[in-house]
Structures are given as C-alpha cells and as structure tokens.
Amino acid sequence: MDIELSAEDLAFRDEVRGFFRDNAYKPGADYNQWRLDWFAKAREKGGWDVPKWPTEFGGPGWTPTQHYIWEQETAVANLPWDLPFGIGMLAPVLMAYGNAEQQERFLPDIRARKVNWCQGYSEPGAGSDLASLKTKAVLSDDGSHYTVNGTKIWTTMAHIADWIFCLTRTDDSGKKQEGITFLLFPMKQEGIEVKPIITLGGAHSVNTVFITDVKVPVENRIGEEGKGWTYAKGLLQHERTGLAGISRSIIALEKLKEQARTVKRGNATLLDDPGFRAKVAELEVDLMAAEYTELRSLASASAGAAPGPESSILKLKGTEIQQRIQKLTVEAGGIYSAAWGGKPVGPSFARGGMAGYLASRAYTIYGGASEVQKDVIAKNVLGIKSSK
Ligand SMILES: Cc1cc2nc3c(=O)[nH]c(=O)nc-3n(C[C@H](O)[C@H](O)[C@H](O)COP(=O)(O)OP(=O)(O)OC[C@H]3O[C@@H](n4cnc5c(N)ncnc54)[C@H](O)[C@@H]3O)c2cc1C
Image 1 (cartoon, rainbow, N blue to C red):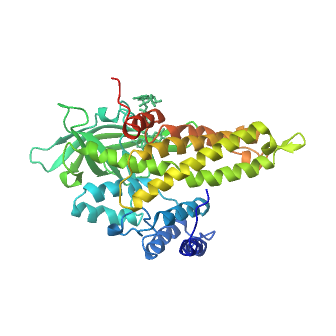
Image 2 (spheres, helix red, strand yellow):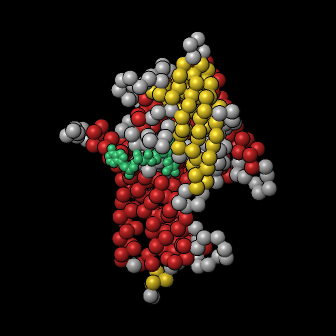
Image 3 (tube, rainbow, N blue to C red):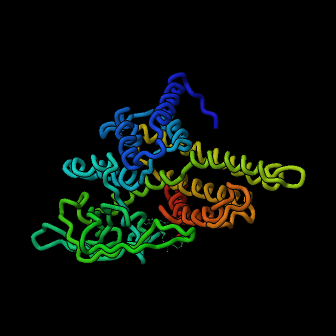
C-alpha cells in the first residue's frame, strides 16, 4: 500500500531508522544489558519504548501515520526481544481499571522491561468458552487475601515469567461471566508448579501451571471482585490487535517472492509459475486489505479509543495470512523444507520451513480461535443475531 508521506513524516521515518541504526546490537555485547539500555534510550526519545501507551502514561502521542511508519520499520529492524503480556496486555488494563497505587506499583517495571508477565486465562476445561473457568479464589474471613487453587494451561512463557495476571472464580452461583475476579501474583513462590508443553514445531513456549493454596493479598485484585470478565475482555481486544502481524507479513511476502525467484521451474522460476503466482497475488490483495484495516484501527487508537470488535477482523485475517505465507514458503522449499537439524541441504531459506509451518498452526488458535473471531464479527461488526 502506498501512503502519502509528508515531509515531516519522511523526517520521522529517517529519525526512526537512525535510532535503530545507532542503537543496534553489537556482536559480543551483553545482550540483556543492551536490551535494557535500548528501551531506556527509546524512552528518552519521548515514549518510543511504549508507542501504544496514551500520552498521560508516557506514550509518544503519534499520529496514525507515525504509528504506521513505526510498524513498518520495526518489521525490518533487529529490535530487542520483548514480550507482549506486560506492555501490550496488562498495562492497558491497569490504566483503565487499576487504582493509582497499582499503576504506580506495576507500570514502571513493566515499562522498563524488568518484570516478565504471563497470561493465566485458559484452563484444561476453558478455552474458547473462557467464562467456564474454575480456578478458585476464596477470600479470607478478615478480607485480607485470597487463597487460589486451580490449573492454567497453554500459559506462554510461564517458565520465565515473574508474575501472572490470572482469572479466578470467586462466585459460581450466578451467570458464569459473573463471579470472575482478576488477580495478580508472583510466579516464583511455593504452590506454583510450571510444567512444559512441547508443541508441534518442537519448541517450548507454552506450559501448564498448577496453583495450590497460593495466597494473594486483596491489594493485588484489579477492580471489583466478580467484575474480572469485563477487564479480561478489554485485554483480549488489545491482544488480538497485536497478533495480526501485518508489517511482518509484508516483509515475509517480499522475502517469499525473492526466494521463489531462486527456485527453478523448467526454463523459468517458481515465481513465473502461473499457479504459484496466482496464490502470491491473492495473498498480496488480502494483505493490502488487512493493512487498510490496521490503519483504521491505528487511527482510532491514536484518537484515544480502545480497540473494538474490528480487532477480531485483524486477528482472523492477519493470522490466516501468516499461515498462508508459511505454507507457500514450504511449497517453495519443496522436500528441503522438511529438513530438521543435521547437515544443511537444499536452499538455505528452506531450512526449518516445515517447523515454522507447523508452529504457525497455533496462530489461528491462540488469542481466541478463528471460529470464535467469526462469531464476534458476525455479532458485533455485522450485527447478525444468533438464531439460538
Ligand atoms: C501456542 C499457544 C499459546 C497460548 N498462550 C496462551 C497464554 O499465554 N495464556 C492463555 O491463557 N491461553 C493461551 N493459549 C490458549 C488459547 O487461548 C486457547 O487454546 C484458545 O482460546 C482455544 O481454546 P481451547 O484450546 O480450549 O480449544 P476449544 O475452545 O476446545 O476449541 C476447540 C475447537 O472448537 C472450536 N470452537 C470452540 N467454540 C466454538 C464456537 N462457539 N463456535 C464454533 N467453533 C468453536 C474452536 O475454534 C476450535 O477449533 C495458547 C494457545 C496456544 C495454542
């Protein structure tokens, strides 16, 4: 998509590129120190460490075009490793529903990337139907703390997380959406056991978390008891917007085309093959439409609005596009994509192709499965009423 950039926008883009260049990681340096320094310097630029935060909490207050430029540039730059759970998910909840003391206590460490958070929503019996969750939190007689018991599953990065934001049940007498309470507690304490789950692509990122008699002070409850569902839903919309990965897909698609140009098909290349070409063209069109949707969402976010149900459109289309790119990468790499470890064989881009493809199956499951996004779009975007 070509978006008209003004002279100021072009100057901003050069400034962003200059910042990435000047603060790039130097091989041999202490990675973690570089990472923390990078975010500190980005902060000095006026909130570049928290681009999506509102200005009253230190965000840069960029225009939609500046956000767009940032997204584009970050997709190609080698940025420090970052997790979305604190910065992109819990922080907006704290800003909207946390009290001043909680904001002061948690936001600075989230911003400085000193504390890693994980998301304790899903349970063995509660995924799409999240409101059925059963992890129990019982308030003590003196009202000072909750005792939490239950199991969370698919908890990404729980094995390195310092804290968890956790949905718990404090009442099961009424509607299942009522009686859910949003609690925060440290992961490294007695009563918390983390067991790894190795997924289809061979990686360890998700875990099962067993919680036994963990005491959580009431000061660690966000908002009111029993109102956690409202806070949890707001967080999911932030999560979904973040998962679309549109800028990354734009770069990945360009890369795929370059790769396909290096694969021979008779006297021509794979990219000249009409069948392959048609799939790439279809992807390009869908990606452009998703890009416009993202731009609309950025425009309303920079006008101060929280992401709405359009985040479901982005999540649905963005993750499908990522999967289609992975699939075509495997197609371009052919049999060499299946190579896993051992000696390199075939073109270098093909290596790990199948592992990436298998890992990408999860994109349309986490953050809310595609079928569930379609339900949200039908109900809240298209206004279609359920026949049930
Ligand atoms: C890699 C990965 C990382 C994750 N990370 C986290 C994390 O950090 N924290 C966390 O809390 N959770 C996490 N999850 C969990 C994720 O949010 C759930 O897997 C997801 O919500 C689906 O729930 P489920 O697995 O229980 O499947 P189910 O809800 O049992 O769904 C099974 C199938 O039924 C379909 N289905 C369900 N309900 C409907 C319906 N109403 N209409 C039509 N079809 C339906 C689904 O689309 C799916 O195809 C992660 C999952 C994965 C795979």
